[in-house]
Image 1: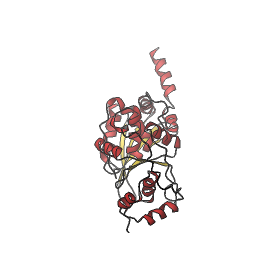
Image 2: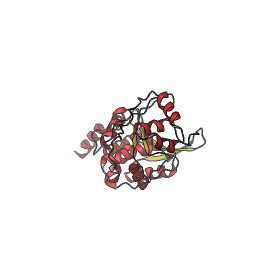
Image 3: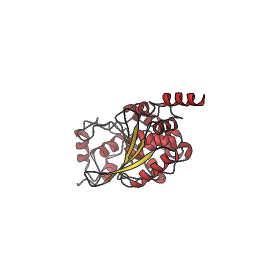
Image 4: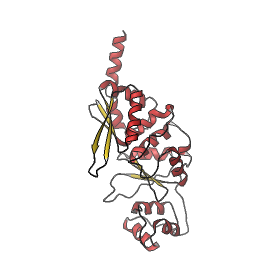
Length: 267
């Protein structure tokens, strides 16, 4: 039986880890039960005992109510996550496993890491939920989003946390703390993000490049000690551990100096 388009080994393993029946997996993948078992064996996944179904837990209402934690996770998903078109699987990939574990904690989800292989070397967790996928679509986040993703309507109260997630997901911060950029393939998202930076009175610009595949890549920049420091004060104002520590360290390099200069000027 031919495998359905867009079905990858990681999707089959995710279904298996979700305790989906072979019949359901055959319907969703187009593969025979033997072919499915071959995929599972190829990746050295433990074969589960028959007759003991179990579903990985997750808070399926997580994206229904805005919070700082939800906004941060959404920012990471929008920039560096993946929603499978054919299944109800959502993936988060991060080199820093602490962030993945924190996402799982916030979502009250079992910590299920995808197998590391030749094509997937970055730690990745999978969340399986039809309800969550539906809620994300209501927010405007859909599968194969990289070229067309829109900036979601984030309540102003949670915008700093969302932007922090965006930077943690696909942002780059210079080690000297003078420059930061976020990369996206969506022009609409780039324009909306720059408007947020401009509303915060930050020095910002967009540069455009062309990828090897011929798609345009947009980089939204924030430059200068003052703008970087102001950005840091905004996005870390209500943040404890929900951040990339390395990026936070670089973005906050000049806070003490700027505050000291402000104090001197005031006096």
